[in-house]
Length: 453
Ligand SMILES: Nc1ncnc2c1ncn2[C@@H]1O[C@H](COP(=O)(O)OP(=O)(O)OP(=O)(O)O)[C@@H](O)[C@H]1O
Ligand SMILES: [Mg+2]
Image 1 (cartoon, rainbow, N blue to C red):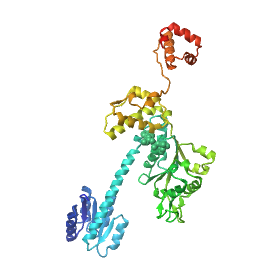
Image 2 (cartoon, rainbow, N blue to C red):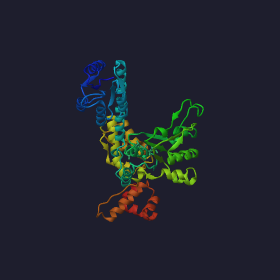
Image 3 (cartoon, protein in one colour):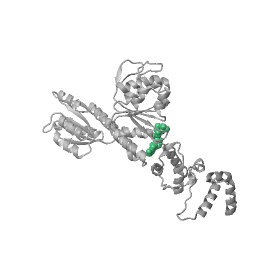
Image 4 (cartoon, helix red, strand yellow):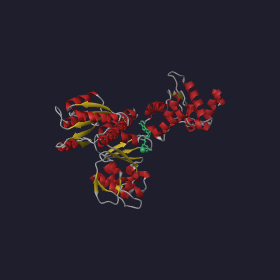
């Protein structure tokens, strides 16, 4: 274990000194305070990893010190030393959040072990906090891109509903960001420090979905050699994300409804009723109302899930977001792969703005990542895009004319460009332009140069 800073509060100099020597030998740095007040001062000024405190001390006793430490930095572990007759105080200390207590005379082996365990626990807590803050960062609104009116409205809705416990149903095509939004709701809610547990309902066969959701007791079925917690229990006090919720089989839908209504369920093969407090977020690619009409999804369950409804628009229905998403992902993969790609050229931007994006944001993100990894260009240009994307033309080409361009010229240019677009097919071009074929033949002769098309 790396070197840690341990603060000892002990008014008896012989006990304090022997503890100091013992823990110093284990490689730690030791601060020694001869009463609670002095110790608290040392605590305030340094980055103490662990506190060991006697109970009875002048000026400020161990319990007060413990409470002050927990108030300042709750993740700091505190070990309490109790002398004869102060055992009651030690019990009180445990209630106030002490890691453990040890009785005098102190056994060096026992205290060494306690110190090691407390420091280990503390490291785990810190790692967890770090992970959590990184996760929170990932799902921070600034990392969910959307400037279009439709997305801005959705962000407003999310901010508004995140603090409440009501169920949320997110509907959107694949790749529109359903999971991202579900995470954002959780990490912007008071449940943020509790678990976010995901269940992919489509990937679980009918046989195992109940044991996954509700857990099972030992011997509940062949192969159930131990009992196991289900996702509902794991998500206790947090959020449960039911992805592809339309795939939950009817028999399980009834049980799910009961948990939603009463917060109660039994493990498979068990008869003890478990109570949980969870928020449910469900997601689906399809409009669940259709499934209700077809009779594959229970109407009562649908209404329970659909307290808040979020419909994520397809990317092709919010094209204004495309430039922002492109820049965001270029930046993201620049960081990930230590590259310096500057962005997307204007003509590429035009093409990508017109593209269909049937795979929505996921397809766009994958496209950028693969272009960057394969070509790492200075600027992403059309030739870097996958062939099928280059071949596909989205909207028809536009022709621009300056105000005041003679009509004759406009007509000529329009005719040439239309013929180009129809690859010289005069019949098609005539149809597009709303004139008859003979007229088009005549105009071509007149123009003369157009015949070379
Ligand atoms: N608005 C957005 N801003 C930034 N990244 C986004 C946005 N929307 C989606 N993404 C990214 O696109 C990818 C797909 O998003 P997500 O997994 O949330 O989609 P989904 O709707 O759950 O798809 P599926 O139905 O296929 O599971 C993820 O990498 C996600 O981070
Ligand atoms: Mg998803």
